[in-house]
Length: 274
Image (cartoon, rainbow, N blue to C red; front, top):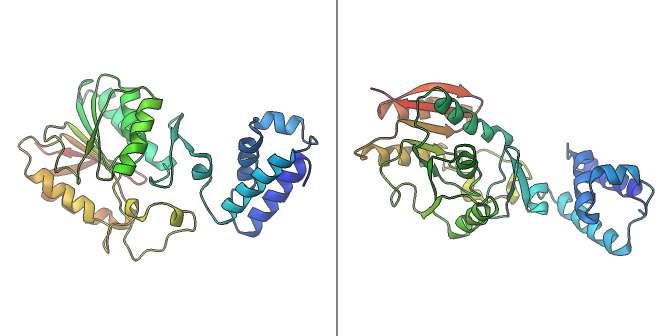
């Protein structure tokens, strides 16, 4: 494994043997990180040799990826809605499907269902990607990033600084110490039932951000119980959850006077019934 092309071939073959579907792309991304060059440079100089130090670095990354550690964790970076965010082992890696939360929020603004200056809570914010993205897309909204865990909030705070956004970070067990005056709550809380098997990559992510006890709706049940006591209830709630639990979530929403108005993939928007 001397040249870039040999290094890529070595890594890709190893990843394929392990059943990693993104073997080719992962190999390029890890080599980019190793030599600090873009893929166009790598492809144009495919016969250039790696230094001994870079060989060592690349093999180290290959070994970590071979243990199914997510590429995003190896890079400490993940793209979300066209922007790069810092992540680490203390937060869930943002998924492309979660971008639909931004799309559905945008639709509410565009259709004048919400004020440009509405007050929003990103509940269970994790790395902060949802709330920060919403604030960047709609600068006049007021945004609270709410999470229980200090290590998680440190990641969110770092992303707030990276993207120079003006938001509030609140340490709270769900909504217990947050405002009771939100127009919108967006939430990607843990929603996987504890008896469901997860893939090898997800095993490297914090289980507290994935599992929601046996039925998968524990945290959403608690959220709706807390909203029930709010004097002013949110006009809209946008949630991510599994198809398998959709009937249970819809039932919880209906019990609390919310109706489903939009559903795309794993994302649903609920409106307060009037």
